[in-house]
Amino acid sequence: MKYYSTNNKSIRVNFREAVLKGIADDQGLFLPEKIKTLPEEIIRDFRKTGLNEIACTIAGIFVNNDIPDKVLSEIIKDSLNFEIPLVKVEENVFSLELFHGPTMAFKDVGARFLARCMSYFTETSKTITILVATSGDTGSAVANGFLGIEGIDVVILYPSGKVSPLQEKQFTTLGKNITAIEVSGTFDDCQEMVKLAFADPELKKRINLSSANSINIARLIPQTFYYFFAYAQLALNSLPLIISVPSGNYGNLTAGLIAKRLGLPVEIFLAASNINRPVPDYLETGEFKPRPSIETIANAMDVGNPGNFERILEMYDHSWKAIKKEIIGFSYTDDQIRKSIKQVYKNTGYLLDPHGATGYLALKEYLYDHPGIGIFFETAHPAKFHTIIEEIIEEDLIIPEKLLEFDNRRKKTVVISNRFEDFKNYLLSQITG
Image (cartoon, rainbow, N blue to C red; front, side, top):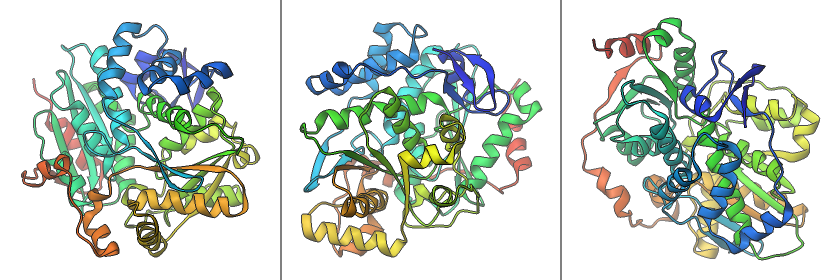
């Protein structure tokens, strides 16, 4: 398996190089050159196996010979050491709970797999500096996934005051090889600074840079695992399968599209967003117009220029007509998200987080006019947003121990402006020797 750059199809690298580089030298994102469809009988047999077996089958396609089968199996076993249950919420409506990992967010799946792959590939004599932009859960998942790994330093940029307090504590209190950069700006500013760092000749020459955002292909590949695992947990039926994906930077949806090309029988994907809606607007008009992000209660989706959208465009040869045949966009306000959380909790006892609520809203809206069986993703534990949720349902939440352990730790950050030069100067100042 080779990977090519979305900016230049003639650039071909293996899995190892794609993982360690994170982003291509021409600033394109890596995509597999060919996605082989799995035989139907293998996908049917997934119902008889577990998550680890499914993951090994799929990962083997993309990793090829760059990681021995035995090592890959251990990486997967260590990465996916938590449950990913499919929970019935209503008739024909299911929640895939992706928040049972160490940081209680879906990004634990991708971040833990990436960390272990990168650790296997890294030459300990040559330190890698990983740059990450986060609007919340990426930071905590990456920080905890890479914590203490020899030969890897992690620098996390996040927008000051725009992530929940618990999310912030999960990546600003760890120390060791984890540095948190508090940026006076938005997530889009943070993401742009990371992109500029990868394009900067001086930084590229002096620092061995890589990425752990979903721009890194090893973050996307493991996210395909749980799409198949969700399907495997459904009872056999003849209804079309609809999957609703809360969408911000669009890595999760990109993984779903890859899963479909592998053979996952999905009728349609719903791209569910908050009021930051450049992609839903594109799906309606055919014009992609990035814009400044707007702060909402579903903060992980506060993205005005989603980094993975160029991968989606490339997968469909930039054909708007082809894309809108497989993806429908939805967008919801904070008031609509709050209302859905309250109503679902009152009617079913199931508690949504703001991102899962967005996915639920899109799924219900689509199923109203289209028969089908639907899955939406619960991407983070509701307790990570407990002040918002408690106000909505007018009850106190029990905060899981996994989250409480961070609460009493002292936050430590480096505060900078949203100017790239300030970030560059910080990185250069950390070079020793």
